[in-house]
Structures are given as C-alpha cells and as structure tokens.
Image (cartoon, rainbow, N blue to C red; front, top):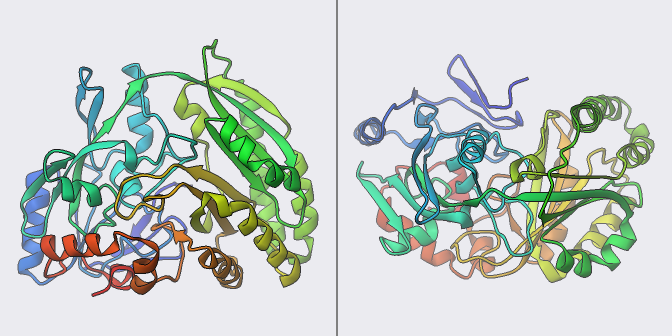
Length: 439
C-alpha cells in the first residue's frame, strides 16, 4: 500500500483517509517560476491556493476547493555547503530521499521524526519532530528558506534576511506562502546506539526525569489496558556500527510491528472486547534489543498500518501527571484502545508557532486504526491535554481554535500580523486556517 495520499477523479484524500478535498484544479510545477505563475493565475481567477506533499497530516491543513499545488517535480538537493555545513533542498523532496542523499555525502541531520515519507516542506510546515533532550524539531534545524508569497514574488529569508518572516515561516502552516526550498544545518554523519527494552509504566513515570536527563533521545510507548511500556534510548556512539540484521529487522519491524500488528488491529476492530488481551500480548511481543547505526536508520521506522492520530505538546514538567490522568480516563471510560500511546520530548525553541516555542515540551500521541471511531477517545484525551495548556500538533486531529491558541502561544499575534502583511487577501486560506488563525 502506498504511503502517500491519493487523488482519483479530482478527489484528494490524505494518508489517514479522514480528509477529502475536491480542488478545482491541480498544478504540478517544474520550477519556482512555474509555481509563482500558478499562484498569480489563481489570484486572478479568484481561487484559493494550497500546496500538499504526501498527505500525512490528519487535519485539513492542505485541503482546498481551489488550486492544489503538488511539488513532486520540485525535488533534489540544490547545494551542499561544507564551509557552513548546510544543505539546500527543493521543497518537494521526500525526507527519505534527503536522508539517503546526505548519507552518501557523509552528512546527516541532527534529529528527525520517526517516519521519512513526508516532503521536507510538509514536515516542517506542520512542526514534525522526533524526540530529543537538546536537539529539536526538523524545522528548528532550518537555516534559511524560500517561499512564493501571495503576489507571486519569491521571498528569501534567514536569521539575517527578512528575520521576522524566518521566525514564523519555518512552521508556517501554509499560511504565509508556498515554500519552494529549505536550507538545513547538517553535520558529519555519526552513529547512534539504540537500546530498546520493556519497562513497567509506573517505573517509567517515576524515573522519567532521570531517563530524560541521561539520554540524548528518550521515548516510550505505553500499551493501554496494561502496565507495560516499550522504551527506546538513542545516544551517540563511537562505534563500531552494529546494525540490526536483515532477518531480525524483518521480524521486529515488518512481521511484528506491521504485519502481526495489522492483524491485531483488524481483530480488535471486529471484536472490541478482545482489545485488552491483545494489548497484553502486544506489550510482550517485542523483546529488548540494542543496535548501532547511522541516524536515519535509528530514528525512523516503517509505518504501514494506517491510523488517525491526535498529539499534544504539554510542558515537560507536566507529562507524568498528564499520563496518569490519561491512564485513569482509559480505565474508567470503558473505551477499548488497541494502539499504543507514544511519548517524546523536545527542548524549547524560538519558532513563533512551534509546539515547543518558548518551553521545554513533552509530546503525547494517541492513535486509532483507520476506520475505527475515534471521536470519543480523542475528545476525552483532548480535555486532559488542554487542562495542561497543551498545544496540538498542527497536522494532527484537534478541535482548538484561534481564541485558544492566542492563550497558549505568547507570540500568536506576531504570526497573525505577519500573515496580514504577506497575505492580506487570504489567498492561502482554507477552513482549517480560518479556524486556527482567525479570519
């Protein structure tokens, strides 16, 4: 099954299958000039404009009934600058292609998320992140960017050039223009040792501060209806490389994590009463393992089971209390949750609408398999997250609006003022942006 969104008979659907759009026309520009012309023409025709990558957002952030821009021809590396240790890449380049190209050059991003099917512009525009004690989201590694604004002009920005745009456009939500290129900070490729092992839920919460402080990258998955988690600690290593063997990797990452897990989801969906037993079996299926490899082979993993997701960033100091409240909610609700809950962290950054803007954050992600009713679960979880001033991931299901965001983002007005300046006629508007940013 393809990892990307689909388009048939003029209908666009996202990867999760929960968002559908019918654009008036689709454009696949082969150059920045062609993209700029498409933007100008849309304005002349009175049509809104949205760009879409692989459709991995679960919100309607990229949906439009106007002009849908597909950047798949805007791919590849423009420049590798070894003096400044940066790489400039076209906006439609998939993260997987970027990671492979960087590895061939002996380079790497410092941190990344856990999938790499997204385009670089889609991932950064929505705030995609991994986990890290000191290393932040993909967008926080941007050193410069280029975007086509509402009048069809090309704007280049960095910390020195148009810095007020740079501060916001790294996670621009598609509201400020169409990103055409990104310049990332890179470093010489390095090795990470991953240590994965089961750990009781209560022990993880009791030792969370120590686990976070002692590891460069710490995350864990909690299996609802159980007291079990699977933890992962990634730390830099002097080597030698000891990758997961092909056979072991297939068993763990494909057969168990995707194949068997998919069957378990089907069973749980057909017979919800079996979910707690399946959760207990799932929590015991993955054994401890340790391996050492280059970053993208450690940070990322295949995700072939399709799902719908909500994720909130809460202040890091509130994460254990939030998780205890979430566990209590699940136990008392009668809900049957077949997907593990993912917990990661990020340091504070200086991006205007980053979920980690100005505060050390912890991310809690809840999922349901595609096609399963998720509203009751997500609504109950969101009530807990917002009680801790949580900030939802811009590309994942939530119900918050501009009034809420103005309260949890101190620089929210800075972003909307910039939007007023760059897109006064709301060429890049859609229903989602109207809700989260206001009119």
